Length: 257
Image 1 (cartoon, helix red, strand yellow):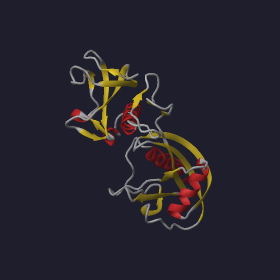
Image 2: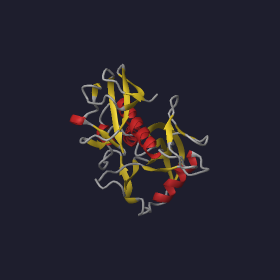
Image 3: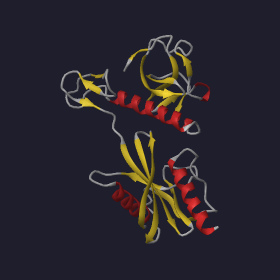
C-alpha cells in the first residue's frame, strides 16, 4: 500500500492536506513524479483512471491548495477518486495517535486502515450516511435554501441518519423537522459519495402527503413549492441533488405537458 514515491512513478496525483487539494493550473496533476517534484514522498495507490494509477500523497503544497469543489465539473469517476483521496488524507491526519492508549499509529501495509503500535486497535475510515430527497406536489417541487448556502442556490432537503434509524425513517424525520411536511410514496433513486467531509448521499423521491411549510430557521433560510418549469437557481450539474431535481422535472413534463 503506502511506499516511497519513485521519480519514475506515473499517473494522476491527489495531493491533499486538511480537506484541500493541490490543483496546479486548476486541474488534477498528471504525469511523472519527477516532473511534479513529488519523488521521495510517501504515496498510496487509491485507484485507476484512464489506465493510469491514481496516487494519494498526504502533504501540503506551498500554493494552489483549493477545495475539492473545484473538480465538480470534471467527469464523475475522476471526481470520486479525488474525493476518495481527500477523505483518506484527512483520515490519516486525524488518526496519528490511538484513541484508546494515545501512542502513535502506523498505516497498514495491506488495507486502508491505521494500526495502533501498542494495543490491538485497528481504525478504518468512517462514512456518514446522509439522505437527500425531492418532494413532488402535483406539478411543483419542494426546494429550499439551506443556511450553509449563501449563494442563492435552492436544493433538495437533506440530513444525516441518526443511530438506530432506517433510511426511510431518516427521510421522514428530516423532512418533518425542516419543513413540517409529511410525505408518502418514498422511493430510492441513487447514491453519491460526497466528501464534504465524509458523507455518502442516498437520494430519494417522495410525494407530498399533508402539512403546510414551516421551516426550521436553524437549518433553512427559505423553502417553497416551485413549478417544474419555473425553478430558482439550482445546484451545479454533477451533484446528486441536481440529478434528483432533473429527474423529478422529467416526471412532471411527462404528465403536465
